[in-house]
Amino acid sequence: MAHTLYTLLEPLGLYKLRQNSLIDAELAAYAAALSILEESLEEIRSQTFVQTAHGEGLLRHEKLVGLQERAGVSLAARRQLVIYRLSTSPFDFHLQGMINSVRAAGMDAEIVENYGEESLTVISKRLIDEFTDLDAVKASLDTMLPAHLKAEYDIGVMTWDMFDALDPDWDLWDSEDFTWSYFDMDGHNLFAGGDGGNAKQ
Image (cartoon, rainbow, N blue to C red; front, side, top):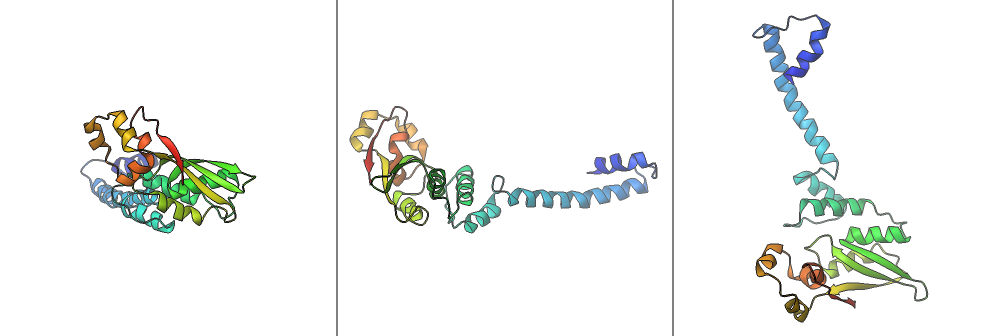
């Protein structure tokens, strides 16, 4: 900051910008105060945008869109969920809008529109929030998807027989750090080579 002040004042020729002068001391004092202000403004800017918010600032964004504080969820996943929720609208009853709603509920998925049956099939790719579960996703989607269309959920199923056939390395298992509900719902995607089945719920 002090260097910036010198750079701005020197072309004016109004001050003798010598080191250890009274002007030098005055500019150093201004620089110290302005640096504190600059840090505060940068913190405000950072917390204003979801993409850079953290700590208390991110918690405020989450509360604004109805998300509860969830210990253990990565910073990137928390920001992603807030952005997805901010991207939804009550009028998003077209395909891309419904996909955005599913993401806002915490699941990355494809949607198949079954016109003859007047229903939707939500095909799960992965959970965005590894600490959620299918019941929570469904409850959230009940408030977002069109009320006149029945929704079926096509999710990955990991059985113990399938898991045993994968013969995973237990060090890898321990390092994954996921919940049992996440394993139950998305376990077939957790290990390379897994090709779990599908089940409608």
